[in-house]
Image (cartoon, rainbow over all chains, first blue to last red; front, side):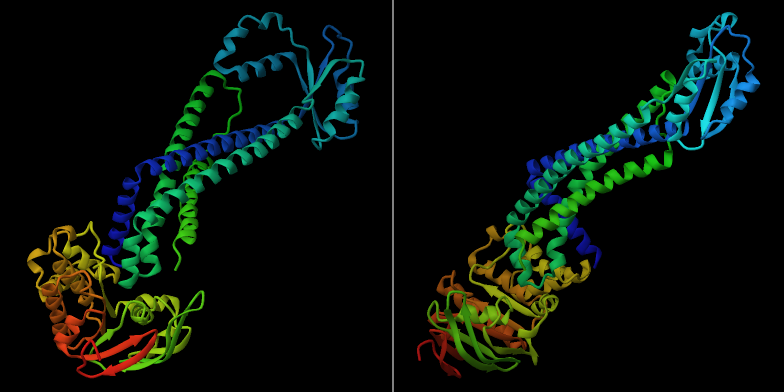
Length: 295
Length: 226
């Protein structure tokens, strides 16, 4: 394949895009919407799974001692907790440390706690970790029967709810994206069909002059791919800019909020979005060629 | 160079276009294929260009059975066959030069070769001066010359013309048929399908007459009417 042939392919492809500018634009817009929704859904799913993972790893039980009861023997109590089935570790957290942890989580906003140290309202607590996440409810319930504890807290159902939301998001996302993806392919097919139709005389002549199937098909495949890539590139840029500015704002205002920020994976995700648009374009043009360009 | 063996073509709906046609054309020959519309001339040319397959029979071109060509061999085969039509079939958005160059672009030639060979082909048909004109700016005779330039730019072994003078006045018709004869002099085998008695009688070449899909006459130095 000579340079001449390649430039012919691209020239014909772009001529055709501008000849049917309205349909070309419509194809780009539909791919854009599809990939935008896909991008938002993927980021939501990634973050929900990430949050669920993070919480899963943090599955801990906090057992708060009754305040003002000085008669409690903390050592003996610790041994009693350790003896429970499923308990992996027990750690005593004095109220001073509890306050320090809260301050850490608040970051810049820790000033709202100013002056609270003198009359620390927090109780002393035990941090209990279980061997398996499933053991958390059982151990938690047993601890709640101890007379020494005022309250026992563990992630009651939070993780389960989050995983449910993620699943729903996935089903809903797949539905909407399939719908729009289908629409995008159909629209690209129509655009290419029109391009084939407006060039049918040229195709017929090219055939008689000995053009190969690839010579005839390439301009249309390039046209479809370009439409798909343009739409998806615009969408991916918008999603990326949106997500990064969200990350920037969140890390300043709400530092305790867990957001996915692995640079490598995010780059890969955005690249995959662009690639998906390209695939929609190639698919649309090949389907159209197979349907309307018989050999 | 071209041999047909008992070729029959039946189109869907039992329309018999050709019936048991056999003939042989030697290298460097000039042949008129005559007959009324529907006699089977166009079908015969379409079989030779492999646009259609015969229902029965075999077709040999340069010793190769083109009925057995595989799909991806067909484009390569067609590059060695030149084709001229009644309606010229030039691309309206390309100049005369670009129309001729298109045949070479399809073959993947380099820009320099395309330019040299296209200009030479246009010179051979006497259209070098109007290389930059668009088809709409050319007369019928001029447009057909450009179409002939496109058909010969690849140095075909066989040049086929389907009613090449059908859209031309008598004066231009004679000029075009003389041009085809000139190309034949330089060694290219030429087959002209026509029902234009004027050009057949002017040249007195071999005539193969078709009627209802059958050969009714095959005569050296023949006239249109037998």
